[in-house]
Image: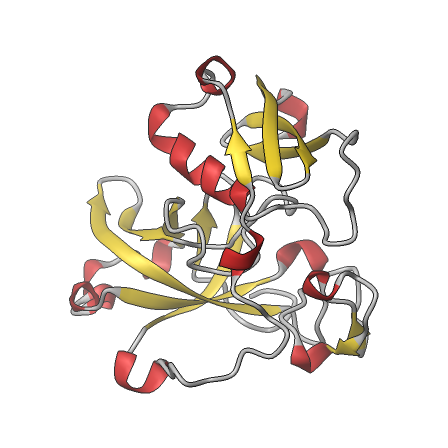
Length: 233
């Protein structure tokens, strides 16, 4: 059982190893693949019978990195420049009375692993490597989708895309099949909205690598990818 009183049934394993750089919402970086590995008592194939008929699923999970940080009744969303306070229940801030998150992801496939049992491969997860999962539910289009819904201050990410420049030689340390996910995540602009210093070198961790980059105007330039120190993984 977790500190919240809910039972952890599995964990997400992704290439996003720190909070900085994780997509701000699920599905906006559909190139990013993750695995959901179940705890031993939930690995039996029968628990997932019929799930393959659904294209998308909901993951209910824990903001495990924020358990000791407390919460505030108001927060400053990055999309509002970090200067305007709104109520915590009007945001998806990780600092909440109960540290629970909800993400809709695409179910790519269900595998039966000889050691791990049932493993779910999903695309578009906005979750850090090792995130605990409390529950899995199928996404049901007729009642879960509302095209006419208003999004408030959460503007579509397409309005914030950066042009990413990364030379092939710079990307060489990263496996070819993971490059599209990294470039898509960088295009979303991982920086806080209130930071705009073209001289500042930013860093994020992805797939065991330290990624360094700068942003000038609408262009993000990747400087280098180097293996992350073992002690920092």
